Image (cartoon, rainbow, N blue to C red; front, top):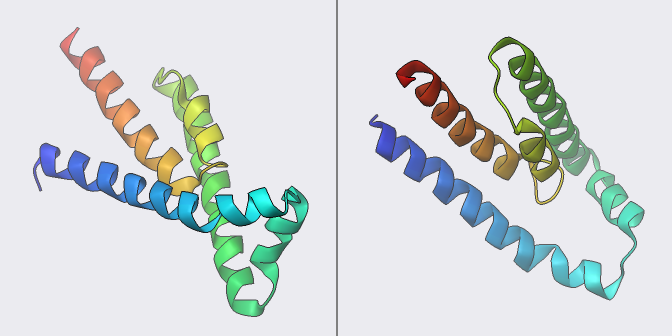
Length: 111
C-alpha cells in the first residue's frame, strides 16, 4: 500500500466516523444533555457493553502509546489526539496520531 493511499484511507475513515457521530450523537445529546446518561447508554446490553469496553480499552492503549512515544521518540502534540480520542472518538484520535507521528518522524529523519 502506498503512503498516499494509507493516508487517504485513515483520513476517510476518520471523516466518515465524525460525520456519523454528528448525525447519530449530537441531536439526541442536544435534546437531552445528560453526558453521564449518554455514556451509560453504551452499556445497556451485553453486546453494546462489549463494544463500549473495547473502545475504552483502545483509548487507554492509544493514550499509553502517545505518552510512551512522547518520551521515547519525541513525538509532540499527541495529547491533542488523546483528547480527540474521547470526543468524537478513538477513530479520529488514532487516525490523527498516525498522521502526526508520520510527519514528525519524517521531519526528524530528513533533518
